[in-house]
Length: 311
Image (cartoon, rainbow, N blue to C red; front, side):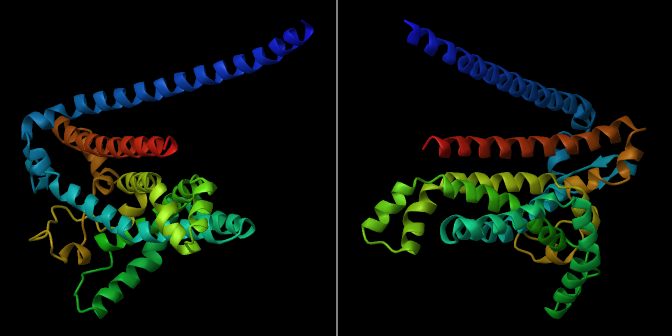
């Protein structure tokens, strides 16, 4: 009888602690969801005048000139996609390769210093990256483009912004990919080695396929950060409005200044727009588009991470 009471006494605090933790987690998650929905509704209401004025041309229009009340954001959507695409194209293979190195190859005593060194890159303020981009990167890009036979006006290009973003999102891809690879059960690796596979073959045949959803989630989360990065991109992208290439396969964006959703929102035009309801609605609409894009990418990445955890 006394043993039963003792067991009940020890379980009650655990159940109470678990219940309290669960209630707090659900409450904070619900609060975050309410804040997100509230922001979407507020931004939609604030941007309604320009959507009524421009219609679908607000998204597909090629010209943004606020003095004539013409608001087309397609060049900024294009610039955002190009910059984020360049960053992912460069950072994804390097980040996943580094994760394979830390999670599968090096011993634990070497893994942590290597991982810590890469994670420190995530702690550097974005404005510092922007200053380094101005001091070093844009000059290298300008010299490189000149050596390749191009004739850029300056080193402030979409390519420069993409290269800078690649460095900034590298820790996100590397850290989350490392976690995804380490979540693969050791039993799977041992079984593969038992079947005669080498270490490298076991990584390719077992670890990477089983961690596939986690790796994709890492890339998507890094993509979300690349979409929302403002200060560093603002400093090196050139901020030239209405820049669209003649064709999707043109190299022109790589040697030209451009504009992204975040660089427009980070500029002085936001202060100018505040006194004009239509102009202000157009600027808030940029924030609405950016918020929707980042929300969709983040939700897909979270779903993939959950699927990977339950696999």
